[in-house]
Length: 242
Image (cartoon, rainbow, N blue to C red; front, side):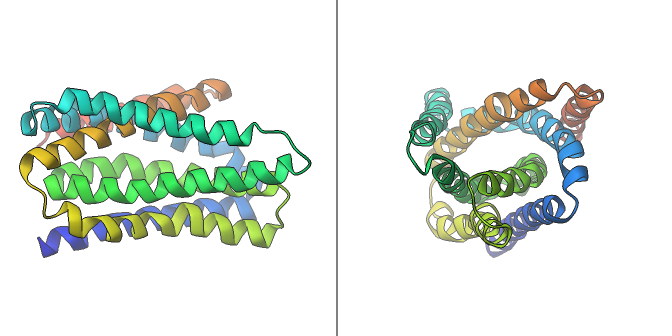
């Protein structure tokens, strides 16, 4: 159990580092970051969606008879949360642009904090499940760092303030969520763990299918489909090689 904790913590710290790299990249190499971040988005979408359907969802179904219902709940919980954030973002006022950056940062920060829960849940099920999930999640952290920083800049924050807030919200929140959630999750029994795993799968499918893929479709980059296909292929190879 102790080894599981350190493995999950290492994965969440890796995610934080990748997010920080994304922030650093867009801060110092803005043109490169804008040009190539979409390929990380496509690859991450391919991995997350494929891993969810090929491994995480079947695994959760075997652990809890009600897992299909929790899968649906997990998907729509994240959808409702995003609708809630969007409702605040869309409010107009004298500081609408400032609110855009601040509310977006809070939303991404909460999302990253919940990512830490996903690491705790999946690594508690098995190291293999955790590694599969982390493969896609870590990759999507790079563009998430870029997006957080840019939204704060557009909201009127200075470059220094945007850098600090983006690092706190999108990077440090993930290992914090993992550390906070692990003591509780590691003590749960198999059916409850199956429920949590299914909720996580619903959230991962939502992130991949309704957040990452639409970004890829907007860009229409020449090799974006190849990046998506590569993500799917990597996930399939890892699952089949178990």
